[in-house]
Length: 174
Image (cartoon, rainbow, N blue to C red; front, side):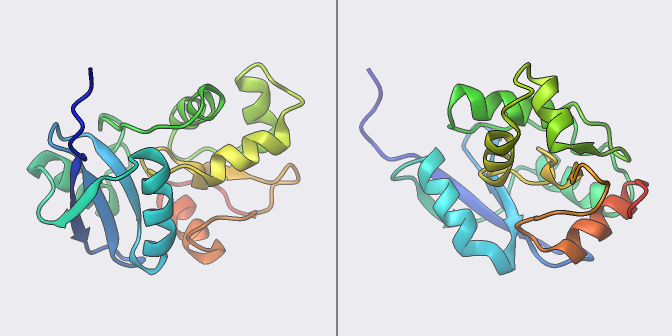
């Protein structure tokens, strides 16, 4: 039986060239949320869905996790690949998030390609919704999903930040 005590999570703040990053980790070092500081309210809403009742305390993320985020922004675009994430979500959402993690840095996919990759080619809209509910941006790289015509489409962090991230990773951006 699960312990009735609410989960305790740590919130670290990491400087980046595109704004302060909020990095939430648990006691085991898994990343539970990652978002930009100007979207803290959104991150808190997603975190409540994925870790209901969890307490959030300011502090330092585990050294290797924080260092990976810093290395990513310093140019090591593969630095986030080995980080462990822990989320809630439905089976469908988790399948979308797993497929997102399989998109290599420097590449993009359309929502349709992502839907096909998870075996649900008609679920383009649902894939888009799952993409938008991703609590661990960058690590689960929702910014690598673009419109079918190759244009940048919605990104919770803003289209200019999405453009920067894609260019940082070496992707061609329309």
